[in-house]
Length: 271
Image (cartoon, rainbow, N blue to C red):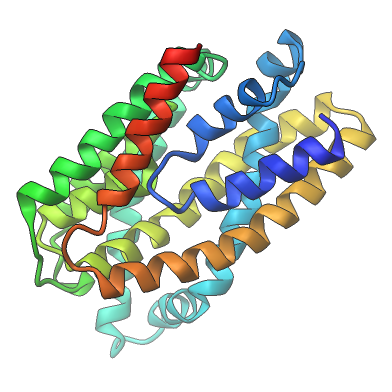
């Protein structure tokens, strides 16, 4: 990939990873939409690790944005009085388990879906349906994150696993599941963002060594620049998203659902 292509993909990644509109689907659709000739070998061997490196920039942005939460989590390990922070840390751990296990077991099968434009567009439309109906049928929640049960956290983590299929949004699935457990919109969004960090970090540990082993120095340099840009964009994206959910306790997902329907339908019609 060229530097210009990487920068464009990084900007799109930084926005779509945290907005509930599937960054993976956009990573698949962007080269197709702009007519990039990346070649089958790159798509098969390098594209997933390349995208994961962009995701790593997003993880760093999330760590910086929620640094107080992670600092409290770390302090809670040695402070018995920090009950709320320790409970939230355990909720993050429990919510991380399903996606980590499913991703590890089904890695090879899921990798084969990445070059598919049709599947990404179709599941993007389904993602819009989930966003719209999931919020519409549930309505307003009243629980904070600390009130969440561990079984409910596991179910939210299971919903997050949908993002392993291109077209489904990790943040969208986990936030909608959070609505159904009774979480407030802002609390559900916060939990979704906290869950993102270990998932992205784990994927990076698996995929980046593959990119380092197979890619040349120029590609690694371009990918690193892309990761930095994606991280900067992601920081402002999470700031905007948290503000959006703080102001909209009802119908916050509607514009994202409509976007998914429109983009998915256009891709299927044109493609």
